[in-house]
Length: 275
Image 1 (cartoon, rainbow, N blue to C red):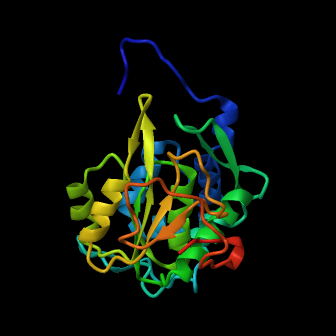
Image 2 (image 1 turned 180 degrees about the vertical axis):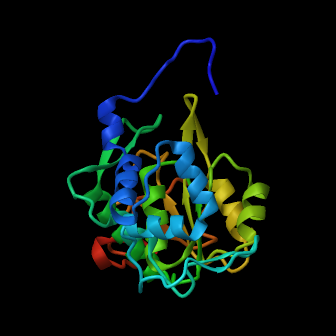
């Protein structure tokens, strides 16, 4: 396909192309598999023609960590219902953090409530471990569901990774969703724990969400604690995770207060969740 008009806004530099993972993968294929592709289209054509060879090469190239090496790529090929790498288990969080240097930047975040901040891999790992410890303290186990009523902030990423590290199932939606939408989405999976913010700011306006969180909590069967991050409120939680936990009925319209270490506090792995 050619472009007969318009202005080219961006193209990769030779240095960027050299650093690209795809470039390293193409060289690895040539060295390890004896496969050479002269174009992206040629690589794509092979990837869809020889699906098992392609995905096994991806597994090996990225050195995916798992319980044991895969013996097969596909157990069943039909769609829907294809079975990938049968008999093999892996942990997404383990693979994400593997090989990351603690002082390198993992996330860059900014919002109307917070200035731009960088979170290192070490800080993200620590926050993830703290949230995971708090979730385990609240009884979350492998296969349990955890729901997040959260904006796109570092705590949401860490909460997802914490769930992945436990083997829990994560579902999340934005705090601008209404009560009915949230209940219809989360009610299907019956989460054990709900993680939520007290509110957010958009377009210079503050939106308190504690009433909605309370309304959601009482309509979801089987939900136990509601864990609130005081994101809108300037008063910070004393917890290393930032979250504070309350009961379903305890999530009222009042602002979330800082967690108190004198109350029921589980200080495992540096976390303190006020129950």
